[in-house]
Image (cartoon, rainbow, N blue to C red; front, side, top):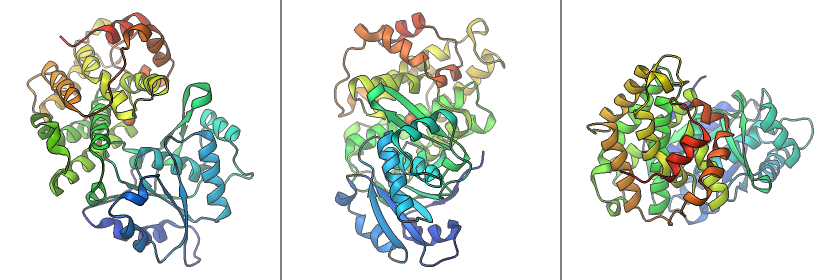
Length: 387
Ligand SMILES: [Fe+2]
């Protein structure tokens, strides 16, 4: 799978109109753009810069509130069709980018998408062609700007769906660290937790290749400093820190674009659907425990055909990049980071552990985990506290 054309650096978001023009399939000018933003867009200090940068295009603005659902994706796709959008520009976090990506992929369908047709597309795969997307992340860690899948939440049925296909991959990703300015501390923390998880999962996945392992380690190499400093110092990250976390999130996103996620993400979906936990927090809650579990893999319980040695080497590569002595030390530091973060308390998972385990194993990405899992082993993992 290819990666999007990627622009990196402070101020690069100023090129968003030029990039939109470069990927539009129509030769008409001005290019017609549907800009998809989140509900926090109007409060971010750089909002005016994005609006100014898009002055050369014919613009329509749509809001993706909170998590994308079949209904919100159908509505956004309808907006793209009504505007006859040549390009969809997504400026926001993972939910905004996923909603925009899914809507753009479905906007060429013969009939107006409906919530039902969006759910069916999530089962059957995205159409081959959609409206090109320029993705501009404003939170670190989701990696949505680099993946060919979009998460869609069917909240009514308590199920996480995924729209997958080449047409879901953005054509361009613009990583501008200045767009992290004004991001509330808890959102930054959740983005970092998602990055931690995606970088490890992308490296140890049974589908990981050398490139995914290297990308996972590269992400952690850029974040190792975070584990050595108190959480409060992240409230106003310096320019170099903003670039590091944005790049780390992008590398982790590219790792899972190759290798998929594994059981931390599979567990996160019931945690989000049951308790409303933010995605990054929901992934981070189990990451330390899963790291210990996977680091203890043996050939007898290894799910990777290449053997337990390959899995241990992949984990060792990330551990070294993170500057930790071993996987257990890294797990402890991740848990200390999580414990010091200013996030809502996590409910006691023990009463529901068996049900959460069963639901998690129903997601296909649980099958990417390099050490075999069962309801019993996963329930045990969820009921165990850190040593
Ligand atoms: Fe994630």
